[in-house]
Image (tube, rainbow, N blue to C red; front, side, top):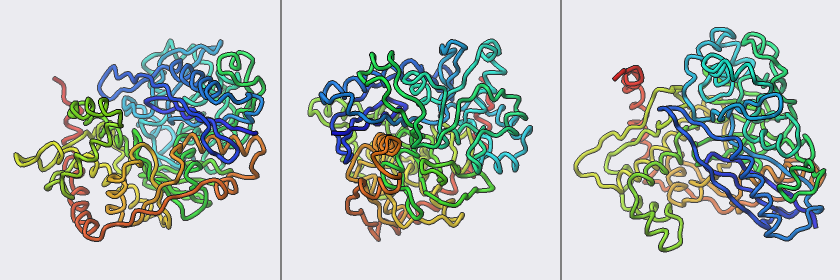
Length: 509
């Protein structure tokens, strides 16, 4: 029997799944870790937590499944994008990783734009300078923590730190590297021009691979910690959304998916390079060699619901523990008590600033239309609807670019909610499907490992054979008509508040 492993390094935890050759789940394990926010708008994590979680979950799935490690033919890695991992000459971590949702580097984004030029930056990296991306974080450290910067010998992304710990190799792959703002995205290589203009030593960066390529093999030391056999191939893998695309079969033109995870994403595959000159959506290399994807990002999608759950739904959390069920199931039941439109209540999901389409690190979450008639179920449903509207914002930009989706899939934790999927179908006014497998990025990473190990001839052929979908949820006509009216109100709220957000950000108390 032949097996493959997918490791998905998320923001809240790392999940590792062991699959057989037909991508049936044999065993899975998850380990969580903390997020640190030392100041408003900052977000950091410990790279050591990621490695310990990855090693522990790999060891658990091997032990629980009792498979022979010699039968595990490859390991694929998926991970949260954009995080800055800085290592010294000995491979030691120099500071906590500044992760994807951190907003501290607004001034550095201005510096990048000035030095490279906004239009030229988009031509090369396919994106404007953004606080979420890695380059701005690196410049922030150089300016604010010069002693750490001087000690830095290697820069890695989160999943690539796990790769280093598994293989000893400093490497990345094109999909994740696309989000660093240092990659020539059309040509799939590091940009000498950007690195020179930003005065960044290219020696800091690892070698760039395509996602299914083998990047190294498991070392003796990593084998002792994980239970893997020394010499097991580790492939490039992919950033979380590129891996989710493989895990949902979105690997050919006309296919798209919506992710409702900590962040939210609308993602469409394209075989032809397509870049939004206004920089509202991101164009990245995808996990299919020679192809790209276009994606819009909502910073606070599932994060918004988790924030509401943690602060206002204590009774549901306690009840769920007593019933041994997911508290989000109870939250769905609560939200269903509120009608479409939540009695004219809106929520803007900008807890961590926003990317698509506003590119504004200063905007913040808002409840709009709140009155004495509203109850908690209205606020809860408003959070879910606000996220759906924000995803519609991304879809509208893709439509402007001529990128259409004949098939829309839903994934991520929020994608398991029938209520949230129905909201998406109604707000988009198009059918929404799920894949039968619930493993998403972990499955995608494992498929890439299988291609790299020679189990499958290509990513597309593997997905056509292995990824199965459920029947779609069709839009409800009456709901879709109501949401169209509501969405028009929603799109007017950010422009009306934009100056107030900036004023609030600059306020000194």
